[in-house]
Image (cartoon, rainbow, N blue to C red; front, side):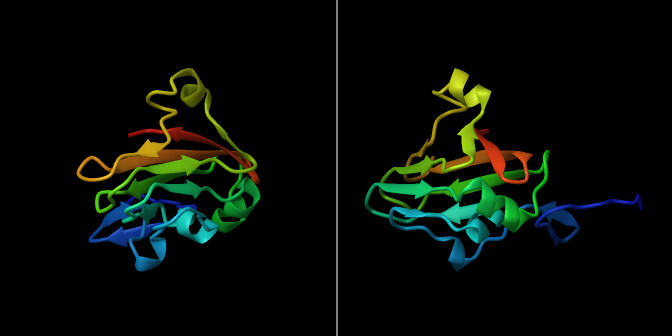
Length: 139
């Protein structure tokens, strides 16, 4: 087997490396600021019947939780399939939308997640320093 080095939260399940951990602690069912620990798992759920906004943690808090350096990246999945209303992501201090998100707001910059069967979204968080990140919707 080849020598492999990992950085950040990594889980191996049956030999497959996954970047998120699904737990009840990942649920955000009302407008709130996600903790750095929730975002660091890479997976957040919402089952709210009301419109919900999830504000991301600051770059400083998330960077510390991930032990981030320039170039660190994390995929964040938000699952609203059991929700009954839209979830909107809000980027916090030391977080900015990427150039792709700014140039193409209808896709890469789409920060809303529908409820129901299509209510899944993947975002990529890329650190430009230990305390600042750019944010892009990637699915």
